[in-house]
Length: 529
Image (cartoon, rainbow, N blue to C red; front, side, top):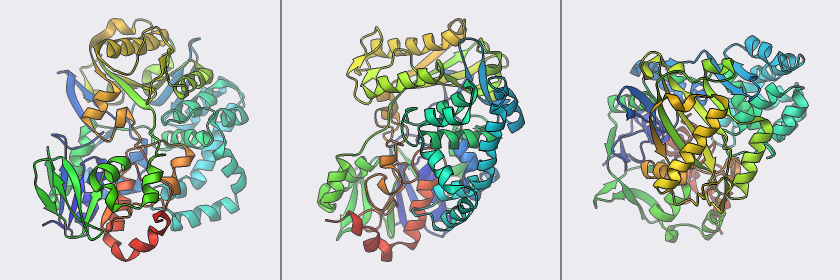
């Protein structure tokens, strides 16, 4: 009997298992899919000569994560690679906003949009260098973040804390307008905010856009050499060297609860795997509570709160094997690993508004990855392993485009949406479609089938909006990994601090399990009737 059973071998589950193993616990990880990794996997499924990242690809949060740094994955032969430029946002007129590896180069490029914007970006980055490390520390520790929070508060008291708090609470459109005279800086902030499900007019989108932009400026958007799966392989290798067990193809169908305590799990094969000390779930919150635990073991207030749980946008992704580099009209985009494909901030607003109305966008904002540019091992010299994803509504009411897409995602709808994304890229890179040797379409339903945490392609395990963050994540309560069931811990991005590959939810759950049981009743008084 292991000390702990971890449900799910995604990055958070594997981080949790590693930390428990470091503490001397015996750990067994059960994964429903035939391979570990969750949304951190790569393959050669598009073309045998091309490595494609199936889900996530660029990892600024991993690069900044103190959780992953402490695991010393370099010892497992994990290596990172960077594109010459971090990201670019080209415009149809040939101009291009570029986030460069060096802040001086970013500033020089933004000065081409408006001379004053070089100083504006440098000021934003100067603020980041002062408060960023403690802000990251506060984000990646359990809520409330006492130590990092106190250090951050002390710095903010002496450096205009109220003004910074106001700035980060702004919608990203307003933040861009206040900080920059030209389009360049505004594009970088707004495009980065759309890495989550935050519209340019959403409160707090400015803070998220600033965070992602500054992480890119300080840490880049690195990729694992050889594919995203190299990160998973490093986590699995480290765990196994410490005696941990990872079993794939083992779907957990229930958490076994006795006397209000989680004592193990049951699998689809009928096996009961007992846990001596804890069960940690790298699953979505609705799946954990409704499907695995059962309403009879949960307080009625939590069940009512789950009815208001909000998923983030659905995701539609296309992978390509390209015969040559992408022919961007704006040449500065060629050296960037990540490209934001949208017709300015207004295009981003239009895109987000259509999703809010339940419409499939007619000119979808595409987050485009040039993986061979970032890591030359991904495909033969002179070619490009590329992908793009866009968002669509979780519930589609109509199609703003001409294809009558309903959300059935049959072959016709998948092909139509993939063509629409390609047409959008073609506007900014004429001749792009002529380079396609092969493509793979991953519709929202396909993504969910390959990773159940990606509900209809929701990549953040719940909205990033303020009403479902911190003490509100995943439901109003303590914002911590403990659950109302003793010995059961939420170890996924459904818990604080949310989505992204950084390992914090898994680490928080592991630490909670290690200190466990005496705090249980106190921490969950807020969830009880």
